Length: 200
Figure 1 (cartoon, rainbow, N blue to C red):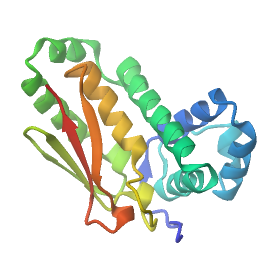
Figure 2: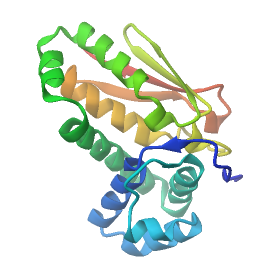
Figure 3: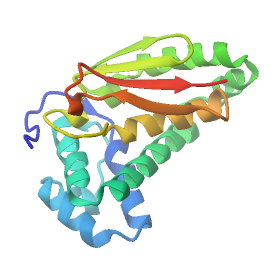
Figure 4: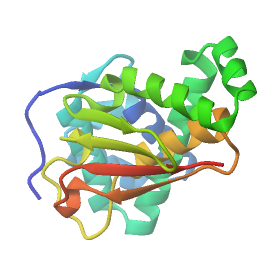
């Protein structure tokens, strides 16, 4: 696997902070140490970043985790980290009045406004990648040049962290029954990472 090493963009620190928290809560400190060392990020395990970080370094970490744990466990940890990232956004970053307004809207309207906000802030989770939204049922998110799977080759979609972030935000702000599924992934050789957001 050709892991990215160029400093080509920045990504939000929760891509690391919540991964550390998920690993610690799962009592996986020993494999976590090996994974972070393999990614050249041992310092993050003890002192997670508190500002935007190099996307290449985050990519090495996420990819090292997928390589260092059994596949189902790696997916579970990445999903938990994604859910925690969304919970942080809901608690700290998304204004409560905006959340209240979205909760009062019909689901289709709320989905449209939330999708617009996600696209406006895509630089925080897509880094140097390009992010596009196709409205409808399902709502489609497409990320081209996704830094977190750049150079990776896999037999299944790997962008669980992104999918979990989207799912939690839509679950809380649009409809409780929302499900997000990655239907295309650059790690599979697809042209983009595509996420289907199905809501009521």
